[in-house]
Length: 247
Image 1 (cartoon, helix red, strand yellow):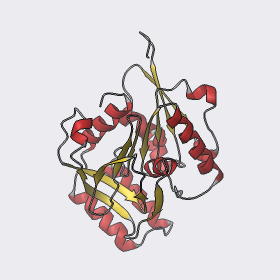
Image 2 (cartoon, rainbow, N blue to C red):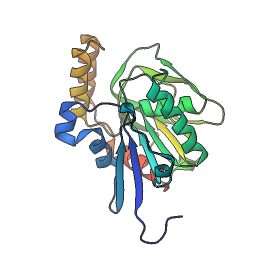
Image 3 (cartoon, one colour):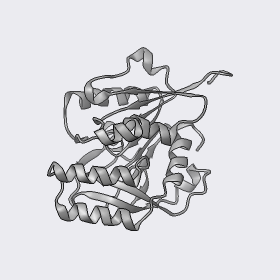
């Protein structure tokens, strides 16, 4: 239990290197997440797990919650830091720590719980997409969410299977598992509630330059961004409420 006057503390587990643009404009992806989730009277720290920087067992106990970011790496891969992250996530689960996973974070959480993450057979999903909530989310949330919300997406992998203990909370016409929850302490979101349209546009350019995507995919993604508005405020409330135990 939080003692009177004690500050809540959260950690971002950073799974990607910051682009120069995001670093300059937002203070890196850590800054992007703090901007979305932080509230007055909280302490936020970052561990660059993709570079091998992990919290110690002693440090884990200092935090009320953890956020796992997106990544250019595959959540179904076995890089040394990914295997170490899986061990950490199992530890956080056993301690009932609040954990919110975004994109890669969503996928690696699913894997840690016994799910299967694979390349999406339908290819990349880049742009703004409509997410449909299951009816059960109404019993979990006091936010009075609508039946659907728009969300920025940028991924080529997906959660294909989940064990029965994990509840799927949302899907889209492209991805079956857009959001899931396990118990009251773990939640994954496939899209990017933290992204601005501006961040996605610059990411599309980077992906194109590195030949990760083709020109037609980049054009389609940019068109989607121009024509649709993500429901960023609603997603911010949902993610913040989960992380702070207000759902």
